[in-house]
Image (tube, rainbow, N blue to C red):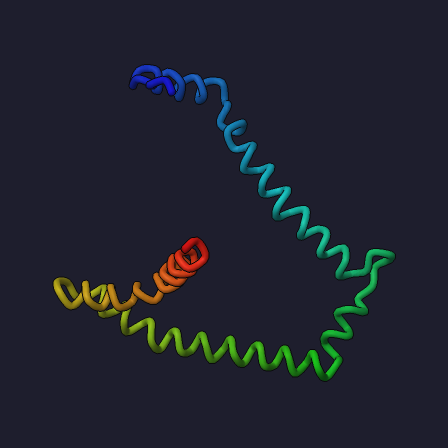
Length: 132
């Protein structure tokens, strides 16, 4: 791979700026967003309103059927309970971390971050068993 010197890099960025090629640099990202986000979203809306003709029958069934109503209620109750628990636990920890410094801040931060590592640790051990 060739080494690009500082002057070459400056010239490259100047050329990009002068020729307005910045939108061209965003083109791959735009294509990915369209292909993997916009098109599936349009397809989902098309299917949800009926692919043969415009109909809200799926939504009427989802909002009026007792089974779906119970599922919605359970989902929203769990979401509310989880949000309240996260606020009750999270705000005091965030306040503590924002106002303290030193040893205790590091310990509390470590205790807060360790649960996020359990997925990685479980994955490593499972790969060791698979490849062992």
